[in-house]
Image 1 (cartoon, rainbow, N blue to C red):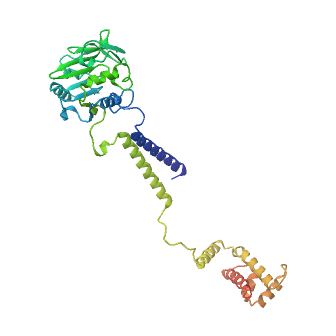
Image 2 (image 1 turned 60 degrees about the vertical axis):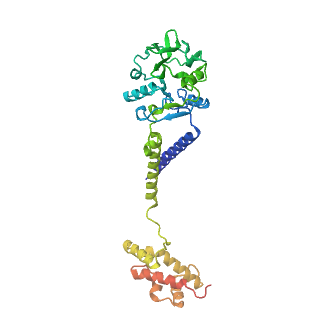
Image 3 (image 1 turned 135 degrees about the vertical axis):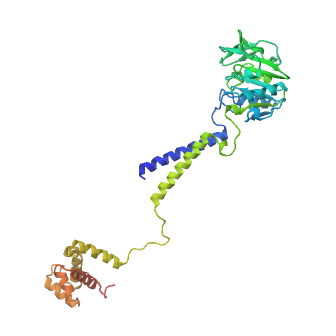
Length: 368
């Protein structure tokens, strides 16, 4: 693997790791504002996180249900909040109708309110331009301390149907209420007064507390409609985390493969020593045999042997071959080795003779 590839993979792994750490820190510290619209988990401007916290501070036990209404028995002593659902199945609408008829309290509406036809015989209808400053239209328990409510002006109804209009202006209805059996349904055309961005304006917070019912009444937010379903195991891990963990695992795997190819086979437990001299000599001899330039190969050895001989015999550097031969005989150098110092090397024996001569002349027993 080339160096640019390694650098690129290292950068990808670093980015994935940093993103994973930042997401973990965000989950611990609360992160930046965000979340699904009208979800009690959401902390953005359109979330209901502040509303859920307000209810808790006012003494309402707050719960978040991650199951669909038809699969969970709803307690009629509770208030259920379902705002801006993408869609509501007929079975769930029937379960909510039975819950309200048994004495439950339902706060519903927002975007995707077509399912209210299954709940009420004649629900509010006819969407029109929203009302930013909604005023009380009737006397009702939910409006005891509410006079003006500020909205985002998203939508309103032209008609409240058989429900009682509670908030609106100029013929536009923002909030309507209907009794169903022993319970009560409170329908918001525009849930923005309860959302984080506007909850602190005008009488919006008072409206939110009044919609929840008497003090101490439990409030349940249906969060399965906002993507918070009940799951376990790997399915409980958010998709973003799954992608991050998968990317990190892939980067680690590629890094291990790259490092493994670079390191090669396992290292020997013992230190590898240089080859014996005989193997070295054999290798040099093989090279000389292939080149067939014996004299050039041993020229350096011959020069070194002559210098050693001249030094031991106290001869000048420009001594002739006769003086060199006489000095070699005085040192008991054999004839073939003496000849190798003054004649070109033509055979393998001549090459060996030069080497033996250097070894013999260089070995001086009187040196220390």
